[in-house]
Length: 421
Ligand code: UD1
Image (cartoon, rainbow, N blue to C red; front, side, top):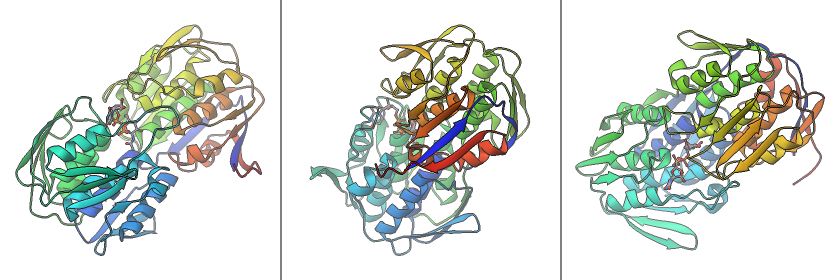
């Protein structure tokens, strides 16, 4: 299993290109199941999760190929509407095929995702949405068996604003009879990107980027070519890398507007931020100011940047509180950050952080994707050597993170730790 060996304490300097968004690419790949034919998807990041989705599409009968940096998906022969447990258990976003399969084939058999490393992650809203559109669902051997002769539009109100449920229901509704409205819909840029892709395929969707989406079903959709948006979480992670190491980092090929709240927090934390149309520079300007953060749905501070913020605040000149209201259990990085010398006390879903003058290198273990990112950040700032174990988590969501960090001057290398588990 791979690990990162990091010699910390070097201020990062320079510029890196941001890759395409994982959380936009995954539902867009699933949406290719809605209409048979060939799709050309640009700016799809080369990640483990993308490979897992490609594998799933192949099981369903699609052809998926990467040629010249472009992902070609051919769903002409897709005919097996099933998502097996073996894949769903490794990537919960596999549930995104449920809506498209049901809409195109009138049936789907999708393994129910279990819990996640850091707590429960229900899919009840996805299922309620499909039922509201007229699907009959049964649970059998851990699989959702879904059937519908024809989906019919419905007025759906989500109890909580869910990215995944919004995307799944929106995809299913594109081919339903009549109009579907989704109230309390997610406004995240990844959902906007998915909606734009569906429109390019011929879907009729209004209210994109607002809390109420309206989808008028059409009899059929056509394949489309599309470009995935840049990854705002990767972008935010690299900006924090610049500031936590006392350096200056430019990220290129990003959408600054998608990072508004993260940039505001970085400025509050004392960083100088320079925005251009598609690039951002974060420069250290003195000590890190303690800055509280509470996660929220977009355009608020993203839960996917919570772990990285705790790493940053571990080195702030004072105390701060980081609260996660989206995923209250998502704090497995905290005990690992403590191994590096961070002073953090957990109370419920809040981390009380007292900034320390320095972190010290240690072996630490990744437990999930964003937790791993926070451990890499803290290790880059820590004195001495850190080994970040089980980096397969980080490979799920960051394309060649060690190479990008090396461009910025970081001393980080990938090694096989010789262990199978
Ligand atoms: C997506 C992102 C993930 C991010 C999260 C929140 C992808 C592949 N993943 O996950 O990186 O952290 O958005 O921005 O895009 N909920 C329910 N029932 C449901 C679904 C969700 O109660 O059926 C709750 C969740 O427990 C959570 C909240 O809704 O408290 C938001 O979750 P959701 O937006 O659905 O997250 P995901 O789509 O799974």
